[in-house]
Image 1 (spheres, rainbow, N blue to C red):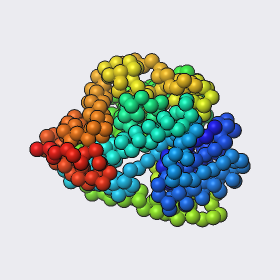
Image 2: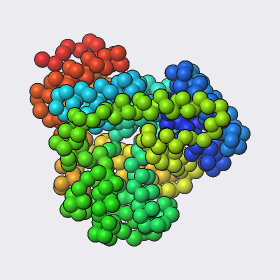
Image 3: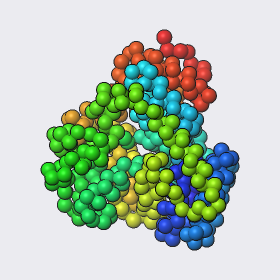
Image 4: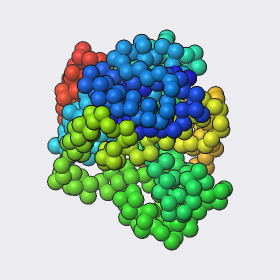
Length: 425
């Protein structure tokens, strides 16, 4: 099997390589291609990847290239992990909304929209080339944020794609430690949209232990997602960490105004990581990588690829078409739900309806994602404005109008689809 990683110069890549090395026999991995357009990252990250694979006894081929055609040709899996514009663009995603009195975050709200507008057209171009060059039954596995919007765009364009986030596997591993059981025994019933999910059940050997955990250890659960224990008790679920931007909006906004932007912190960590990666004696991922985020990224990625490759039937939380899974959402919305992974792809497990207090927020953000995906593809400024107006973290006309202009101006270099559009009045 040939696997291509687009954005292979990411500092996350050693995490992924570690997982692929562990699962290389089950995956029957014969060729791994790391593609990146940045020559320095190709050299540094590719060098470490080679040393890691050699230390693990990998006897297949490793290719490090900037040629997209070479990467995609014959690939069975195309993993996409891009950051269009790099950390500099992320910084604008986080700071422009703050200046407008809105939450500054790179995957949700106005910042998430800025990233989506830059990212989706690039991913779609790669996917189109993959449809021409990759294996006939190839899968596109997207880790690129905002995953929900990117996956929606890929599916709208007819590609064989699935999205993946590390939130669910993080909950699984945390719960397994709490319960002192093997992670494989814990099934996480996490539902919603990407970065807008709630855990409605934690099943150990088929029994739902979430009610007991909420009754006995709610303080620990709440601390893990940085939300008040009373909120978890009253909702009867574990919200994703990202729900703090909604449930604690004003508090988080004040916190962000006085804190160093996360983008600046990550940029510093990346510089340190790349320096560590240069060490010719380094053959394992360094501990500093844990501060970069993306915990259990390699496990989630390799589990999904292995399940798709072998048709194992494992149940994993992925981003797919709704197709009637969650009542109250359109069939073509991209939802994040448990699915049984077979050779033909993920089949979402049946889900009971969302409680009204959850469904209302999901419908709100799903409408935003629909508008955001259309805006990214068409380059219509008015759709950017409407997407911002629809998002509950913006939702006001003056802010939506100002953010439309400022996000498009800041991202101009990466937004050619908007060049011919008139400014919002």
